[in-house]
Length: 499
Image (cartoon, rainbow, N blue to C red):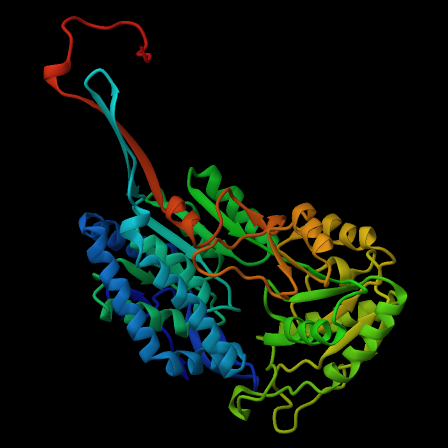
């Protein structure tokens, strides 16, 4: 049994709280490691180390900081296969999907190499008689991130890469379900030249989260996970005077218009709905065909595609479509929601309830499910299932279809499949959702744009990565300067105004 560690001040440190969480191999159901759960005292130690190390890092010029990130990109490419294998072993996703997880994080690191450009301030000469005015972006100090199990490489890099590029120290509290890759990333960053104490990994549960939220030294907190926890972290963090960005749940709709290429739409739905066993905040979980004829044809095309999906462990090869879900509890929750859908009257046209994989009967595998005739009052429509379940809600008109997506409490991502430019343009302009795909099923922006949903999918004013990240992880300071040769004699008692 492997005992994992924290990573504090450049060293692997055993947990001292005496509390541990089991880390499973989702394919076999076996416990493969135990993860330490930090106490407040352990978190306090990491914060103290970060606070001591951060000023010297902030004083390092942005170009030199960027060179460390450049080296990290090289090391990530070098160790891609090793990282992907470790990720698949704990999460269960396929090796190609795990490599994509690392790659999407790596691309944010690449973007952050541009820190010298992104951190430039503004300057106005002669803003007044003999007065110059300029601004500068300065690091916050010690920052922190709380990241989910489903992207153990990508989302930590989305947070710590811009934070560190801006001159901050960063404390990462990853999911205790998939902690190995974050520890590996911290090692790689220090191999790239990052000073000790600037990136630290402290594993834990709610005790560690609360230690972050109530620590006066930590200036900002990022979070990705479920909406109830996002609301708790956002409310608590803001009440403590911290800068907070939180990203929560999702229920992403894809509208299929009558003029769409239905083969392309069906392929897109299968990949976006069942990839990573549906454990993605950007997964398409609701198909909305417009018109009965469109719906009938779409279901006809979906059924054989869903039935043909290959489910298996990552060790079975690169042609596996998706693997197990992360825990037995996740599997039970998915199965319970499927049964609820049946009980509430939805039509289960592909039934994966009896799925069992020979030799892996104790694994957390869930068969693919496809529902038709789902209605908005059903639990499988309202709740985020986070599993390989696609629900079809039939709409009679475009207005009804767009209304479904707009009325849902979540607003993370959405898509429309159509050949009509006017419809696509209207959809993009009107929809109250943060990320929109036009004939693109999973519209996750590239690193130089920003990622973020609307409504109950996001809390905070700024998105992840892209230009917003440099705003989130810095404060703007504005200086007004006038040198003695331009100062008039005598005091000025009125508020200064432009003349």
